[in-house]
Image 1: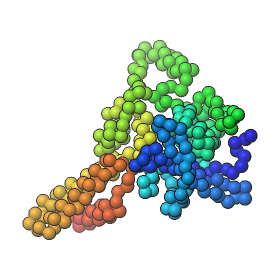
Image 2 (image 1 turned 45 degrees about the vertical axis):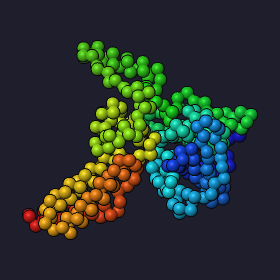
Image 3 (image 1 turned 90 degrees about the horizontal axis):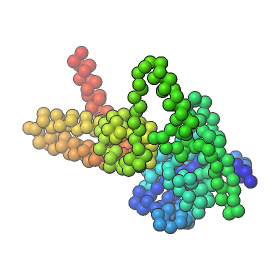
Image 4 (image 1 turned 30 degrees about the vertical axis):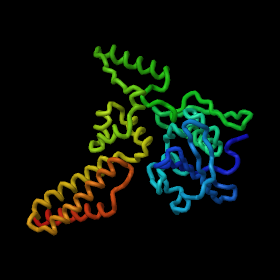
Length: 321
């Protein structure tokens, strides 16, 4: 049986419950033969000490009215945080599947075939995507079926499951050593090999470790954490952080400094000083919230306040000139 037969999977979005980590919700969108789309919402229990189970699911995500094609990793809907989003119409050249949803790393997924089969289709879609770049190639992957209608993937090398701290295979390693030896013989100068972070050390990096460097650019944060930039971005996706929050925190720090200077200028006006202090307290609270939950966006009120400050600065420069 060909996995591509039947309804075509166009979108798969997986959400994790922010309170009960064992609850997982998924939204599947299938294109039928007549061209219409069928949206199916499912809920699962990912027990740590037991098998996974599918439970009866009320349409919580569909009732929010957000189109499935607009959902992305890091999006929060109520108590649900999007941890994986697949859209066939804008399939990237390389996408990341969390370890929790990787069948090779989490064999317990086989107990819920309604989700596992769609994830396998995505694996096949990723492996079938051509990469014209010279340094990134996806391996071929075959799919076989056993007597229990479970599909098993056979692959020689899959980029989606590859440890980014290691070279892909021994052949690539030997070629790299040969090229370095050739360069060393030609120039007479030894090439210093950059030490890579150990995979165990990368796995031990927690969200609290990342939060220490949210006020730094992501490049400096990767240096302080002693990991590569690609590895750090992968860790961010694991924790549901779509973008490094340095710019948001830096913007809030600038607004807080401006308010502090304004408060010093308005010490004699008690009402104005109170309003400035209240605004400053709100910004500091928002900054603490972003440091704890870096995937949230700036409040619309904060954006308007920042825009007002920019306008005042522009007018002041225009009058000065």
